[in-house]
Structures are given as structure tokens and as C-alpha cells.
Image (tube, rainbow, N blue to C red; front, side, top):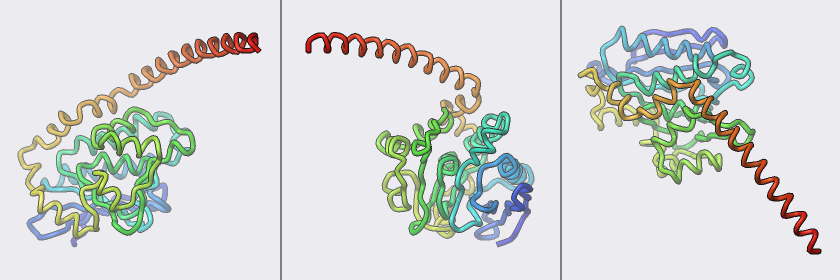
Length: 270
């Protein structure tokens, strides 16, 4: 396995290392990111990740990109909420940009989930084309419900597109934790295993030459046009949420009046 290049993650002293896997003629690029302690999706991590993807696209032959973690316990533990909320434009300038890059990447992408992928880490996995999960350790979970952080449109839409309604409900409204075999049964991942299984999937599905004609990214843009629209219209998403909240306030006020009216009537009958 030859090392092609590495990109530093300056904020944590971490790195993203690109290696070439498989037979010599197979262009399987493995991006292994190590950003202690749990691969949080911070601006510096995202900048390094996107740069690594850009280097592969512009400096190497077309092939398949596999992403995985060099930290055995975690693929990614999602966002650093304090940093995300204190960094102006974090969502549209960093997180949506990362999601968009994977959604439209001009080569097949495979997410090799070696450990836990929570919240934003799980979402990042879903923005890949294929997913393989460790069968013995690690969970996939969207746990925002448990600490009161609502999900925005690009966080939700990728699950809507790629999961069945029943699984989507379990992910979002139950914060269910999916181990490898449960993820496979639910259709979240394509296989369980490690790097050997990832390479096997790439070969079995004949992914190595899928990017050769140059339209692989375009096909994904058309496939996931609704998700792409959400990523590209951050202001529109916020305006829609404001409109919904205004309507909710109106309905709550109307409901409260009806409750008060009922209470007066009920007490008068006692």
C-alpha cells in the first residue's frame, strides 16, 4: 500500500493520509484521517478533507475514493457544537460545502466506518455513495433529539433520499443506535467488514471505471437534485424555517385560546 500524499490538520496536529490500495492497476484511493480525539468536523478538518479530495481529482487518475479513520474508536463524532456556533457561516461555508463535495464528487466514494459515527459523522457517511461498517464495534446514530438541537434541511434530506421511511423515523425520531448488522438489515450500509470488504465491494460492483466517462458527478447531481438544492440555498432554508415558526406561533396562540375557553366552560359546569 503506497502512500501518495498527506495533508495536515493544523488545529489538532492530525493528518489526512492518502494511500493507494489494491492491485497496481486499480486506482483505489484510501483517505485515512486522524484528528484527535474523535475526528470532529471543524473548519480546519473540513478544509484539509476537501483539499485531499481536490488533490485526488486534479492530480491522479480517476478511480474510487475510500474514506476511513485512523482512530479505532471513532469514524467521526460529528460537530464541535461550541466551535460550530461561534464560527460565523460555519454551516454554509464549511459543513454544507463538505457534504456537497461528496454528493457531487466525480468518482465513486466509499465510507469505511471503523467505529462510531454520531450526528454529523453519520450524515457525512450518508453523503458517500456506499458504506461499509465494522460488524463488531461502533454505532451509527443521530442523537440531536437527546440534547435538543434541531436538524436543518441538508442534515435531514440525505436521510430522506437514501433510507426507507421506517428507518428514517428510527434514525431521527428515536435516535436509535445502529450496530453493523442492524445497519445492514436496515439498508443504511451496503456491507459489513473492513478494508478488504471495501475493496471487494469496489471490484464486485465494477466501480473502478465508473468515473471514466466524466459524467459520474453529473449523474449524482441529477439523482439528488433536491438534496443539492437544499445545500445551495442556505438562506432559503432559514427563511422557510422562520415562516414555519411564525405559523406555529399563530397556531399555538389559537390553540391556547381554545383551551382557555374550554376551561371556563368546564369549570362553569362543575
